[in-house]
Structures are given as C-alpha cells and as structure tokens.
Length: 312
Ligand code: NAD
Ligand code: UDP
Image (tube, rainbow, N blue to C red; front, side, top):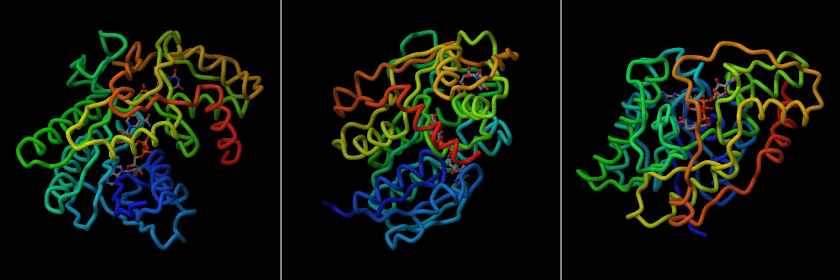
C-alpha cells in the first residue's frame, strides 16, 4: 500500500472527520486543517493519539504551506443556518480558500479535490440532475453565498487546471447524513432525529412535498477516495449521492417509525429559495469510478439514530 501525505481542509467537520479516519486506517499520514467554525475537536479526538495524524488550527482564507501528495478541500460550513450566519465569510471561505489551496497544490504539485455541492444546480428545472445541467441559481438570495461561492470555486479549479496544469478533481455532493452531524446544524436529518428522540414536534417546512435524496456518509467517503485515485484526465465534475428520492414527509415518517417516537408533525413556513426537488443522476460516477452507494435510508438512519442517542 502506498503511504501518502494527505491534507484535509475542514477535516474536523462531519464529512471530514470520517475521511480523516478512513485515510488513516488505510495507512496514510493525515493533516487535518480546520478553524473549528462548525467542526469540533470531539469529531477527531479519537485520532489525536495516532502519530500519523496532525491537527492544524488554521483558516483557509489565509495561505498555508505544507508538503502533501493530495489535498481534499472540504472547508466550508454546509448547513443553511451555519452558512447564512456570516454570508460574506462563507463566500470568502469558498473563493479565497480555493485560491489558497489551489496555489498550494500548484506549488507542491499535489492533486486536489474540491467538495462541491448539488446546490450548484440551485432549484433545478431538470430532474434528475446530470453534471451537464448548468443549474437554476438565484445570485442574490439567502442561499447565494453558499451556491455562488461553490460555483466560483468550481470555476477556479477548472481554470487552475487549464492555465497551470494543476491536477484537479471536482465532486458534487448531494445531501449526506450520518454520525457526527452537528445536533444543532438545522439540517433535516439531524433536526428530525433530535426532535423524535425527545418526543418534540417534528418541524416540516412547507407542506413537506419537497424531495431530497439522502446519502450515508460512508458511501460518500468511498466515492471521494475513488475519485482521488481515478486517472488524472478524469477531473469531473461528478455527482455523488444516493439516487433514491424521498419527500420530507416520508423522511419524517421513517424517523418516527425507527425511533418509536410519540412526536407529532407540525408545519412551518418554507424558507425562501428552498429547492423543490433534488435527485442525482450518478451514471457518470458508475461508469468512471465503478461507484454507487450501498447503504439505503433505513439502514443509515438506524446507525445515525444510535449516534444521536449517545450525544443528546
Ligand atoms: P461541516 O460544517 O461539518 O464541515 C465543514 C468544516 O469546515 C468544519 O469543520 C468547519 O469548522 C470547517 N471550516 C469552515 N470554514 C473554514 C475556514 N474558513 N477555514 C478552515 N476550516 C473551515 O460540513 P460537512 O457536512 O462536513 O461538509 C463538508 C464539505 O462537504 C463542505 O465543503 C460542504 O459544502 C460539502 N458538502 C456537504 C454536503 C452534506 O450534505 N453534508 C452536501 C454537499 C456538499
Ligand atoms: N427541512 C424541514 N424541517 C427541518 C429542516 C429542514 O422540513 O427541520 C427541509 C428544508 O426546508 C429542505 C429539506 O428539509 O426542504 C432539506 O433541508 P436541509 O437543510 O437538510 O438541506 P438542503 O435544503 O440544503 O438540501
């Protein structure tokens, strides 16, 4: 097995902590860089004793230099309440963070993967979403700091590749859930499980007819590693998500069933620009990476519910 030096920005977050763990288990040296805006030490505390793991407190909006073979660029708050808390900072994190990490990759000749998002498709008018779809994004709405920041990051990745021959990879991640989601991040899976476990009302925004396709975190991590290992000419963007699509009402019903909760459903206003539907077309990932998610919603929810039982 080749032992690599791998930098993961946003490594103390939900997805990043699983990626750190997996890459360490595969015998690599992992540098986890995070400013702890939404990430937590608790997510990676079990890795701190490993001599091949290093924790770096740093903000990606400032340059950082280190020797590495690969960079996974995950630094960016991902839940709507977190990225809307300081929207200017969210744009800076995606744009300046990408410039700094691409500059580093260029200087040290590292391969770099960008954690982009299904939000680049906005409130899509094409369903399911293929990578060739340009999206339907409001540039001045509540979600714009995240959506447009991530879109600009994709532009930067492509242009560093064209202009400076940087080895890049872009993945577009669809809604992902699992252990170590922040209990207060406001995302639908964590909200519903926390509410159900406490027999509190389950908050459905709008009528709950909007859809999402939920991917378990282990499937995503597998896809990220496969993408990084794929031939240099395959740069993406490539969708990563579970194509099984559910309405938000169906999700609420599943969570109530799996937790045995007495919670009731209540209906709250739908936030502005909330996409009505979202489902990845993953034929490209299947063809190029031989990747498809394996863990379906009930199995993933069961594992996630066990995690939340231990933290609340
Ligand atoms: P998260 O909020 O748990 O993790 C993000 C991490 O980035 C946190 O540890 C945070 O402290 C760190 N961070 C934020 N700003 C930073 C900065 N300026 N400098 C250094 N570190 C910074 O979110 P997540 O769900 O783990 O998402 C990880 C990545 O995947 C994000 O880039 C996100 O946009 C992308 N993504 C996630 C999902 C999902 O459903 N989880 C979907 C699409 C895309
Ligand atoms: N949502 C909901 N109740 C909640 C939290 C979210 O009905 O307590 C809805 C939200 O309006 C959206 C969907 O669930 O339609 C997914 O929301 P999330 O914030 O998890 O992700 P995103 O909208 O970014 O896909």
